[in-house]
Image (tube, rainbow, N blue to C red; front, side, top):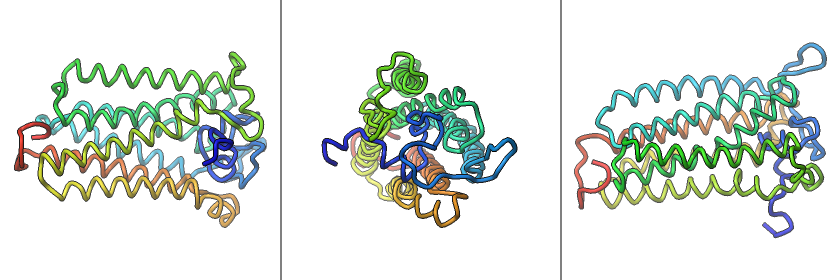
Length: 296
């Protein structure tokens, strides 16, 4: 990507339904100068519409499924990183609640949608950071489940949430006017581009690499890698649907649905696979291939 394109959201908002686009639109929804295929969904009274019913339903399903996983993990009392994994799942539930009102195109006032969008964008970077730290937990640098471990994870995640959320809300509410230029083509916002697009990707790659080292070098097993790889593939499929295939789906369905629906579905399946992966490597009967550090 050329330097002149770095930080630009025009192409992303043209082709995809993203929460960030709510902050760069004068109407604070998915309609902006980038044009593209606009979701219309189900018409309501007073000219309003429920733009993305499919995503809303899948977000609700994701909340139910993730809550089940969170409660199920409570039964794994001796599992390494149990509390830390529950913290990640709780973050994901908050993301899905916000997604109903941002990507789901739920009819709201612009001020309320900005608020949900700010929390949504901030929680994405916080959740991926906490997921990466879940991989670090396996190295047992600090005892898992302790106030120190959970405190460091929660505080660092909160810093990212508050910092990113503030920038997002300042962009939407024009508190300082610092990012007002992002409302003009090519909708450039370097701060949110780094925090929303790049940093979470780095955290996810780091999570995969750290967990792969634990599984292969410490556990000496192959089967858990199938779950971890499956989670990565499912997540990647969701991004492909959202960023690449979305406009074709939107145009082909007369603006009824787009790739955001499939992104929600595949991301949910990816989170489920991450939980299955974590559950599999915290079983009590794994043979330890080398040093007695890490997951046991």
